[in-house]
Image (cartoon, rainbow, N blue to C red):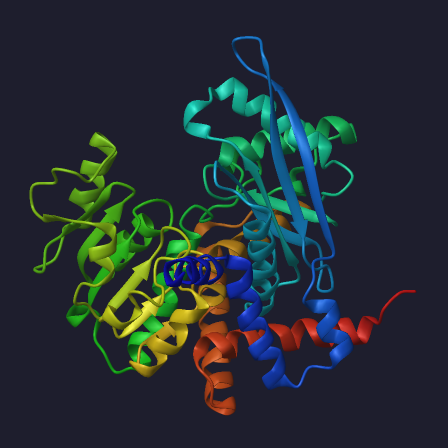
Length: 425
């Protein structure tokens, strides 16, 4: 019976929607949020479930389940990625959509939150099958997305090509080219310079600010990175160039560790050549779970949700936890980290560089005028630095940790706009 209770507790702890809601409830209570506003903000505006018939390459039809959750439109069009994975759930998409609302509000850009997903295994599908599935999914959502309604972007297992298919499908229905319907497009297809590096660069920026705040020096700061893709790999590369000592990094198969520091350019070259970090000659192998518990000053989980839980939080040894992934820390782990003095840069701030640059891409598409990369990076720097200090000041003023401060700041901003706009009846 005890084992069953533990299993249920673990399932509840690792449910991303429950983690998000527990933090929302805590922040709303501290804000003394009006009950009527609380009832409006705690639920999505719209949830769409669609069933997607697709002709597979061998001629049979497979029906995939797709979701799009649009959480909030108060501050502007909804914004959020689309992920393809076999374990996509509606609860996960709900949580991610809400996180996008708070993330956009934390960095003060004029978007609400949305998220999408399709239950599929893209590793077992051909390019043509993925294209047919993406186009049919887009067609099913055609009345609910658009530059003024909901602007999708890449996420797990989707990329520039996926966004190009969505943009083309939407444009065929609109009977003219609509570049601003998605972000994360190829640069030659009205994408933005600096977009691919933006999430990793944003992480570098907020980590730099945290290191200054804690009177640390980059060259004396050991960094552990979980994940080596578009977020972790780029963040590790940029931090290495800045002088940080990257002592461990991982991919889906496991990690590598060298306490003297890794040459990240060589690591990434090995990964590109072999498509795995395994057998990298200048480091020792380490599992993804062991990697999180290594001695370091900065821990950067940039893989997936629920990596730091009540089970391992007490063994986390970092001074700064910068969340590159969405929801890598469960709500139950927050209290343990706070008691242990870990300075958390929460996901809705730490990885907001991606959506900030997506906002830049949307603006450029609507203007039809595109910026140089140094302009993109300069504007990203301005927003991320200001947002870091907004959250830090809120935390100090209200006597709360950074995560709750970020939620309070975001909820306060969305609640203000909701109150001013009123409820249409």
